[in-house]
Image (cartoon, rainbow, N blue to C red):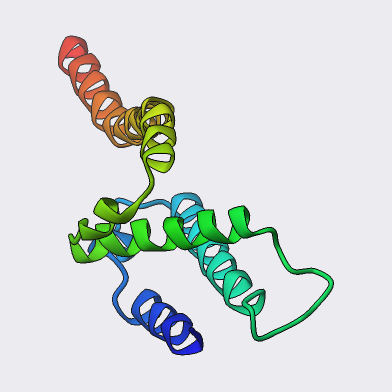
Length: 137
Protein backbone atom coordinates (compact mmCIF):
# COMPACT_ATOMS: atom_id res chain seq x y z
CA UNK A 1 0.00 0.00 0.00
CA UNK A 2 2.83 2.39 0.85
CA UNK A 3 4.33 1.78 -2.58
CA UNK A 4 1.01 2.73 -4.18
CA UNK A 5 1.04 5.98 -2.21
CA UNK A 6 4.59 6.75 -3.31
CA UNK A 7 3.71 5.99 -6.93
CA UNK A 8 0.69 8.29 -6.73
CA UNK A 9 2.80 11.11 -5.27
CA UNK A 10 5.50 10.63 -7.91
CA UNK A 11 2.91 10.57 -10.68
CA UNK A 12 1.27 13.71 -9.29
CA UNK A 13 4.56 15.56 -8.96
CA UNK A 14 6.24 14.42 -12.17
CA UNK A 15 3.33 13.99 -14.53
CA UNK A 16 1.04 16.94 -13.91
CA UNK A 17 -1.61 17.44 -16.57
CA UNK A 18 -0.41 19.79 -19.32
CA UNK A 19 -2.88 22.48 -18.32
CA UNK A 20 -1.50 22.78 -14.76
CA UNK A 21 1.47 24.89 -15.88
CA UNK A 22 -0.19 26.54 -18.85
CA UNK A 23 -0.54 30.33 -18.91
CA UNK A 24 -4.32 30.01 -19.26
CA UNK A 25 -4.60 28.72 -15.69
CA UNK A 26 -4.63 31.53 -13.15
CA UNK A 27 -2.63 31.33 -9.96
CA UNK A 28 -5.86 30.88 -8.02
CA UNK A 29 -6.97 28.00 -10.26
CA UNK A 30 -3.53 26.40 -10.04
CA UNK A 31 -3.60 26.70 -6.24
CA UNK A 32 -7.13 25.23 -6.14
CA UNK A 33 -6.03 22.29 -8.30
CA UNK A 34 -2.94 21.66 -6.18
CA UNK A 35 -4.99 21.82 -2.96
CA UNK A 36 -7.50 19.38 -4.43
CA UNK A 37 -4.71 17.03 -5.47
CA UNK A 38 -3.11 17.25 -2.03
CA UNK A 39 -6.46 16.42 -0.38
CA UNK A 40 -6.78 13.37 -2.60
CA UNK A 41 -3.26 12.25 -1.71
CA UNK A 42 -4.03 12.77 1.97
CA UNK A 43 -7.16 10.67 1.61
CA UNK A 44 -5.15 7.91 0.00
CA UNK A 45 -2.46 8.06 2.67
CA UNK A 46 -5.15 8.16 5.38
CA UNK A 47 -6.65 4.99 3.97
CA UNK A 48 -3.19 3.39 3.97
CA UNK A 49 -2.41 4.39 7.57
CA UNK A 50 -5.79 3.18 8.76
CA UNK A 51 -5.19 -0.24 7.24
CA UNK A 52 -5.44 -3.49 9.20
CA UNK A 53 -1.72 -3.58 10.08
CA UNK A 54 -1.93 -0.42 12.19
CA UNK A 55 -4.17 -0.63 15.22
CA UNK A 56 -4.93 2.92 16.26
CA UNK A 57 -7.97 4.46 17.93
CA UNK A 58 -8.48 6.67 14.86
CA UNK A 59 -9.19 3.80 12.45
CA UNK A 60 -11.85 4.89 10.00
CA UNK A 61 -15.00 2.82 9.57
CA UNK A 62 -14.86 0.28 6.76
CA UNK A 63 -17.32 2.23 4.61
CA UNK A 64 -15.21 5.40 4.71
CA UNK A 65 -12.05 3.50 3.82
CA UNK A 66 -13.96 1.70 1.08
CA UNK A 67 -15.19 5.03 -0.35
CA UNK A 68 -11.68 6.50 -0.21
CA UNK A 69 -10.32 3.44 -2.01
CA UNK A 70 -12.98 3.74 -4.71
CA UNK A 71 -12.29 7.47 -5.05
CA UNK A 72 -8.57 6.81 -5.47
CA UNK A 73 -9.28 4.16 -8.11
CA UNK A 74 -11.57 6.56 -9.96
CA UNK A 75 -8.92 9.28 -9.99
CA UNK A 76 -6.36 6.79 -11.32
CA UNK A 77 -8.89 5.60 -13.91
CA UNK A 78 -9.23 9.09 -15.37
CA UNK A 79 -5.48 9.47 -15.63
CA UNK A 80 -4.88 6.00 -17.04
CA UNK A 81 -8.16 5.81 -18.98
CA UNK A 82 -8.89 2.39 -17.46
CA UNK A 83 -12.40 1.93 -16.07
CA UNK A 84 -12.25 -1.83 -15.53
CA UNK A 85 -12.63 -1.41 -11.76
CA UNK A 86 -16.24 -0.28 -12.25
CA UNK A 87 -17.17 -3.89 -12.99
CA UNK A 88 -16.26 -4.81 -9.43
CA UNK A 89 -18.28 -2.12 -7.65
CA UNK A 90 -21.45 -3.09 -5.89
CA UNK A 91 -24.80 -2.12 -7.34
CA UNK A 92 -25.31 0.34 -4.47
CA UNK A 93 -21.98 2.02 -5.20
CA UNK A 94 -22.88 2.36 -8.86
CA UNK A 95 -26.30 3.78 -7.98
CA UNK A 96 -24.70 6.30 -5.63
CA UNK A 97 -22.31 7.37 -8.39
CA UNK A 98 -25.25 7.90 -10.72
CA UNK A 99 -27.06 9.99 -8.10
CA UNK A 100 -23.98 12.18 -7.57
CA UNK A 101 -23.11 12.41 -11.25
CA UNK A 102 -25.57 15.19 -12.14
CA UNK A 103 -24.45 17.48 -9.34
CA UNK A 104 -20.78 16.83 -10.11
CA UNK A 105 -21.32 17.55 -13.79
CA UNK A 106 -23.27 20.74 -13.03
CA UNK A 107 -20.43 21.91 -10.78
CA UNK A 108 -17.88 21.16 -13.52
CA UNK A 109 -19.98 22.98 -16.12
CA UNK A 110 -20.28 26.02 -13.85
CA UNK A 111 -16.53 26.03 -13.32
CA UNK A 112 -15.90 25.75 -17.06
CA UNK A 113 -18.31 28.64 -17.72
CA UNK A 114 -16.49 30.76 -15.17
CA UNK A 115 -13.09 29.94 -16.69
CA UNK A 116 -14.45 30.60 -20.20
CA UNK A 117 -15.81 33.99 -19.15
CA UNK A 118 -12.53 34.85 -17.42
CA UNK A 119 -10.60 34.15 -20.62
CA UNK A 120 -13.20 35.76 -22.87
CA UNK A 121 -13.63 39.05 -20.99
CA UNK A 122 -10.24 40.62 -21.89
CA UNK A 123 -10.90 39.89 -25.56
CA UNK A 124 -14.33 41.53 -25.38
CA UNK A 125 -12.84 44.53 -23.57
CA UNK A 126 -10.16 44.93 -26.26
CA UNK A 127 -12.79 44.73 -29.00
CA UNK A 128 -14.88 47.41 -27.28
CA UNK A 129 -11.88 49.72 -26.90
CA UNK A 130 -10.96 49.26 -30.54
CA UNK A 131 -14.53 50.00 -31.60
CA UNK A 132 -14.55 53.18 -29.46
CA UNK A 133 -11.25 54.34 -30.95
CA UNK A 134 -12.60 53.84 -34.46
CA UNK A 135 -15.70 55.89 -33.61
CA UNK A 136 -13.53 58.79 -32.40
CA UNK A 137 -11.82 59.13 -35.81
